[in-house]
Image 1 (cartoon, rainbow, N blue to C red):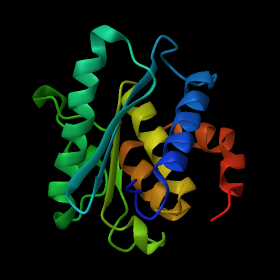
Image 2: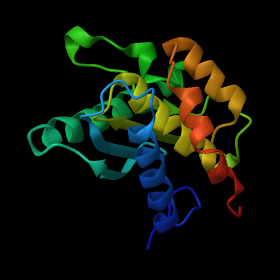
Image 3: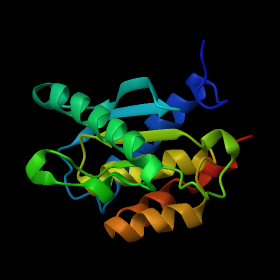
Length: 174
């Protein structure tokens, strides 16, 4: 089975599901009705995964499946222009939302994280971004300094509470 940036697909999905579960349980979660969404993952410009995390409402599933991929593709296309957050090209009137991230070109994360783009859709935009950021950080594709640069763009109030709720995930073997 193909891995994701050198990580096993099984471990990647276990971490992603755990991060989503912890986000939906956060007291700071602004929309408790939303209990899941879709995650798109691109590696070096190729879509390698689009999968449901948690439980997405059936009536919204198709919309979020499409949106997570749009965020990832848009960010992948603009990363050569220095974009590392889908908030940098956000235009809600045109259906372009925040929630996608990639490692900045000068990232301190592991080399395997370069070229990795992730995007969640199904939570609030801040929730989408926070979940993706924490997943990327657990695998060390981003470091805290990178995440701070990304949340400086979105002014995301949900990242720190989620990061704190997921501290134990950083103890996994690398």
